[in-house]
Length: 265
Length: 265
Image 1 (tube, one colour):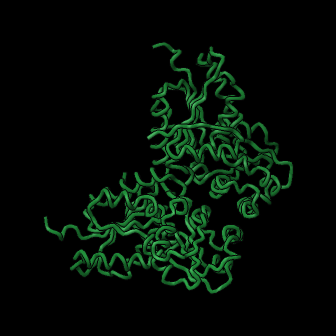
Image 2 (tube, helix red, strand yellow):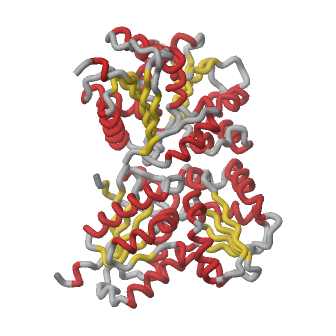
């Protein structure tokens, strides 16, 4: 079997948010073909247990491996936080997550050493960001905040709604009296609320969207493993486990992009 | 095989909301044993497609049938709206939904003939309430409103939060200029927002929580089929597909009730 047959990057998320990661990878690696899978039949992952998120992540990876991917990107923060060890232990393929790149970027950017991590309940409870940051900067002071309503607000496209503003205000109150100068947007939906978050914090906060750093990591890893493509025309395919029309509709709103996707059983 | 072995009522919901239905059934039928299943690994159902909700409903019913239930209550509005025909067509057991009882009650209560239906996107799109109401009262004027953020607000227990008030206000704006006198709370989570909804509508609106009428329907059906219990001590069991501890925690908050449940695979 020639290596040529394994020429796609595989990527999964619980739903649509991972497209932010895909866009960054497309930007950094414009010739690489990508297969994206959104597990829309079982989303969201953010409030579910580690055991369940691990099981879903393994099933998603098996689906992508059957499509002959050469490298896997776990584009979902909750899945990266809960399932990355299990995935690396189970599958013999390079696997990139979004947590480690996000933590690295935050450590590079902070001047005060005070970093806030915004994420789903699962991401925050897993302590994955906290552990990665502390490993790089042991004296870091970390402020983890679970923001469970951010995903439904973004999914409903209420990103400028006064209710969204109140909820952002509420969640960020604990940061008011800190020296936090860097905020990790630790869920692929959160960049859509960046303006509201910025207004609430009212200072020169640096935002870390792990997607960009993750894409650089994908490029480095492909090079290390001599897996980069020799093709010049990339191919993009999209799969979901439920309701491709809704995926297309939200993608059009959030990304101003026409995406045709297929439903798997 | 004696009939005695099939002595439980089975009931499923996507998560915890169906406990409102269970409480009503316990109240109306205090000697009946009940098995409750909350599909917490795949919730919510409200934004998912009919095909997926049907598949989940069939799987949940098979799980309950294996526990030898004598009657099934579909305690989830979205599953009732999307899957009831498929379930009745597939399984040879009396099946009670929450839509028909809710529609009947609303038609009994309205004086103006103007009825609002609040529900998930799935429930509203299915037109199940609209069809049931029109069948009973062809001249009814129906105002269906999808309220996708109500479930996350209740799950986060933000039922008095100013943001919840703003979202309620937004969703109910179309009712301001109508003669609606009856509002169906067409999702098991919505009764927890009843106070906010009532304040917003500022009039003598009648609320229909389908749970109570559903429980009466269960009693009637058991009697019709000679399935009512001869026991005097009921037994209640609770199963979930993910995170029993979280289920117990939210049940304690919403229902001031200690519930021990088991996780199924």
